[in-house]
Image (tube, rainbow, N blue to C red; front, side):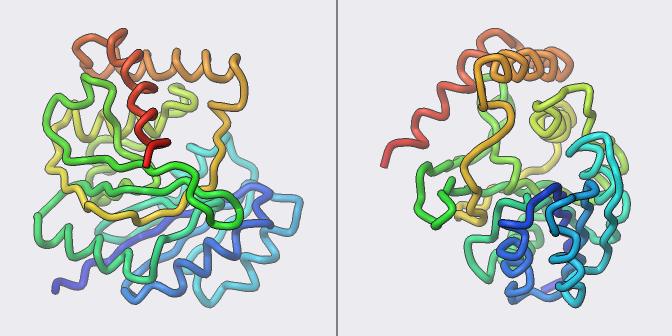
Length: 249
């Protein structure tokens, strides 16, 4: 197998309760050509101390004020030197020790620009609450409210260099907009890894209350209209409806 270098970026802010589990899941990966980058937003709860205690597993760490989560993600991506870049949230962790090996094998086998997979939403004890099963991608699928789970999204670093980073003007939809831009608008070669690779802790700023949900819809709509979604109002309706299946089974 070609020795593909993977850059992982974790963004933290007051994540002392979860960051050790996240780091441990990276450290246990059987695939070793991994560059691990952590960008912290000046945490005040001991997060930075925990990260420093794990410095043997971390190739770059910076703690400083930022302009939000997507600004921090962009800082991490710009520091990356790997062939492929992915993000692992501070509250999340890999589903098993072979995730990166499987990602690399799929990239090589499919000569892909982008890979996405499946994830489980879990509670703090690891109990599965929801199951996000992405299914295969085909051109135009975004028009019908489809999107892959962002924590499973990996892209060649050259994609970020050519097509840009996360655009914070899209608010909570900045990750959705980037995936739209890469996959739908610019028609990158996409590979689906039909496996759960991330356990994602239940939550999210955009879903905390009705006002945040309305703001999130506006951000989604702006992302759709600026990335050539054929009927953005239809996509806006279908996008949340697709989540219903995550609670079944």
